[in-house]
Structure formats: C-alpha cells, structure tokens
Length: 82
Image 1 (spheres, rainbow, N blue to C red):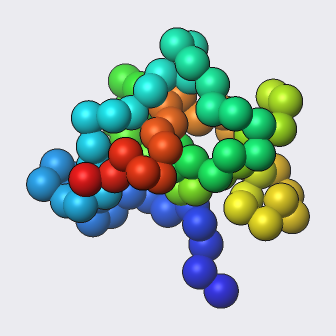
Image 2 (cartoon, rainbow, N blue to C red; image 1 turned 135 degrees about the vertical axis):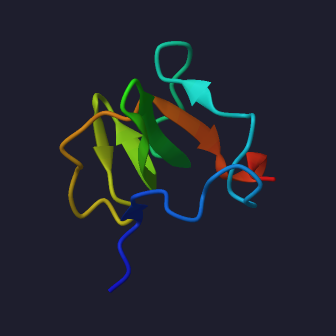
C-alpha cells in the first residue's frame, strides 16, 4: 500500500510538484473536507509532504481512516500544482 505521506524526496525545486502557491496555515485554512497537498516547512527544512483533508483542528488521510499526529505548516490546492 502506498502511503499518502512521504519525506518529500523527489519534490525539490524544479520538480512538477513544487509550486509557489503554498499557503501558510497561519494565513488561511482550506475548506473542511477539501483534499489538499500539505507539508511542514520550518527551520529543520521541508518534510511530511502529503495529501490530507482537514476536519476541525485535525488532518486526516484522504480516506478519512485516521488522522496524522502533526499539524502541517503549509498547504496548497491540488489544482495549484505546476
């Protein structure tokens, strides 16, 4: 089974999946239930790239089977991919 969460390997600059359209969680939240790309980007670098859905303060896997044990720092709409 492929995990929707990954380390970001292969998603560095120049890759199809990297976009300037990332939105900080502190600036705006996606609509509840909307499937979006997410990541953590902080002083330790970029990691935990994946597709998640938000419900309240929790972030769930796309099938809503479980939530992740972290809060992403950034998100983007799937249509914002380059």
